[in-house]
Image (cartoon, rainbow, N blue to C red; front, side, top):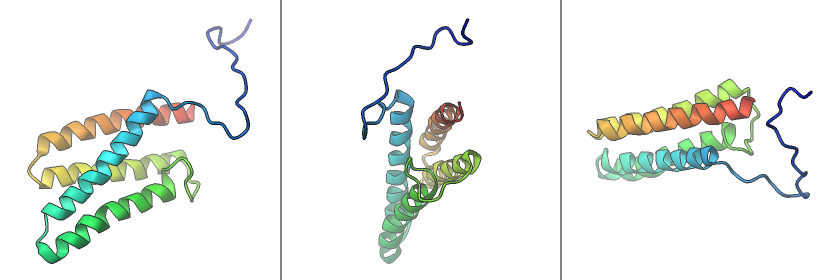
Amino acid sequence: MTDSPNVRAQAPLAPGMRPRPTAIEIGSVLCGIFAFVTLAIWGFTAWPLPWNIVAGIGAPLLAILIWALFVSPRAVLAVHPFIRALVELFVYAAATVAWWSMGQAWIGLGFAIVAVVLGALNGRRRLA
């Protein structure tokens, strides 16, 4: 008798093919894109004219660089899954604080709840 009777055997994928993304993975990608767009909006609206261009381009670029180094599926630096989760949480927290500093606390709170739930579900799936 097997330990997990509800698991079906799957045929191996052809070389160069990847499994289909799940709804949780798609939601995590959308949360990341929303966080980067949020940081751009915050940079362009929260600073006076010469600095808004720097912050509007620099804040999302820095977040994308950190994401690419630690969190992305093809991350440059392989780190422990908990460090990866902390970096992901840091980017989401930055976007949440950006919404709060723009006076949109409810949008920030809603984004934080969705991002943390999707991040926890995606992290659980990665650790399983």
